[in-house]
Image 1 (cartoon, one colour):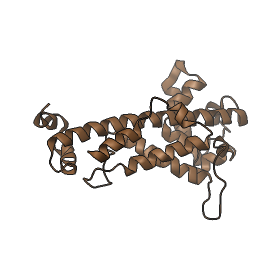
Image 2 (spheres, one colour; image 1 turned 180 degrees about the vertical axis):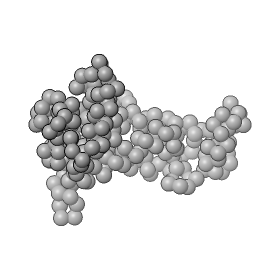
Image 3 (cartoon, one colour; image 1 turned 45 degrees about the vertical axis):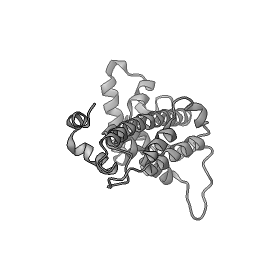
Image 4 (tube, one colour; image 1 turned 90 degrees about the horizontal axis):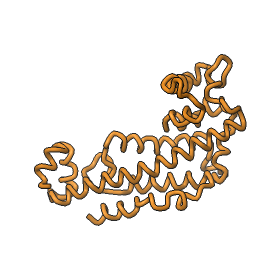
Length: 227
């Protein structure tokens, strides 16, 4: 496809960043656009695997510590989330249950709740509501030091970074540039990729084995760097 046709489909505004990053080389600009799409696909797959691993680990822990129907029971009168401090969490659970309707089951409810919900389980109020024990889903987490506290706030902030990246990809924002600049760069992706692998390791999950055949992020990053 000629660049003019490609640009007409994707829009002049969208392609201007790619052109600028490639010194107005139209062929390279199209290649960079396609590599960005591939990188987004690769990274979204890895994030999806992490999200499933995280929510399943949290669910297993809370089933053991709170009860099998901890989510549904949590929004009932007297439930752990039935208070002003956890109102948004309770609303998310209620909305998901309503959406499932007759198809409701606890497992389907767990799957229906998005990454943002599982991130906020580590917010201060939700962490307290669930018994202040959720960090046990990260058994290999480093011990806190005087300079770095590896507490629920630290984990919450780490998850926020992954959640923000997930949302960027979902909204088709490019991830191959320096922030707010028309300069191709893979530092952002590599740093977040490293963060995801680190959290897998804290969960005592062999991420290399789990992602075998799925993970080509470094390969695509290298192609972008060499373009």
